[in-house]
Image 1 (cartoon, one colour):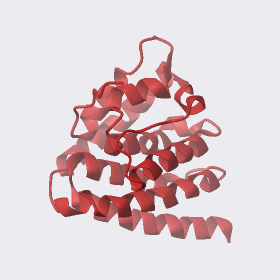
Image 2 (cartoon, helix red, strand yellow; image 1 turned 90 degrees about the vertical axis):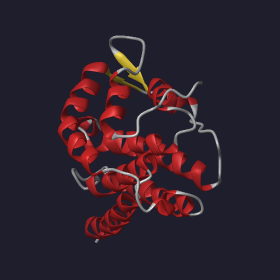
Image 3 (cartoon, one colour; image 1 turned 90 degrees about the horizontal axis):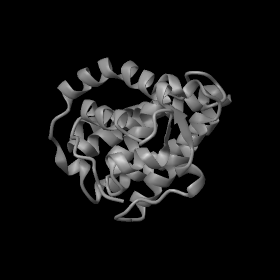
Image 4 (cartoon, one colour; image 1 turned 135 degrees about the vertical axis):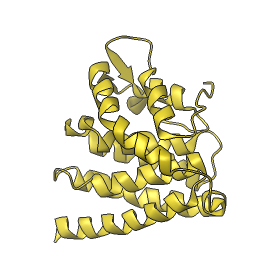
Length: 196
């Protein structure tokens, strides 16, 4: 699968997602993977984070599926894989194109604001060995997502953190990685509030 992803900002990534797939009615996870690139761990982390932050998250089980996807992506980054792999049952999951397009429209205003903030800085925080810390944190967040999937809106903090980590890797913006760590701590607080 060729790497097609060229975007270094969130709006460009949304443009790529809008073009995903070859059919009019459904878009498969495999189509999204082909669009963002098999070697691009940053964009691959952004996509499930954005899904949980969008109206698609209202579909039962989507948060848990995204948690599994983040676990696989971050886990492979953590063990040093160069290419990304997903099991067939996840690659074949689909969503209606109208839902995808509605979610992209919902995210556009946020993307415009985020893109004005993103720029290369504190690059050391987006390179190895620090990417292993990012990956380990994302693995922990992935384990949280299915738990929070049962309570509406509680998954916003971990999904925001995963998205921020992905964006930090895409734009080489270490300051966004710092923000993502803050959101990760907030996620632990949310989990404590839900469980206790």
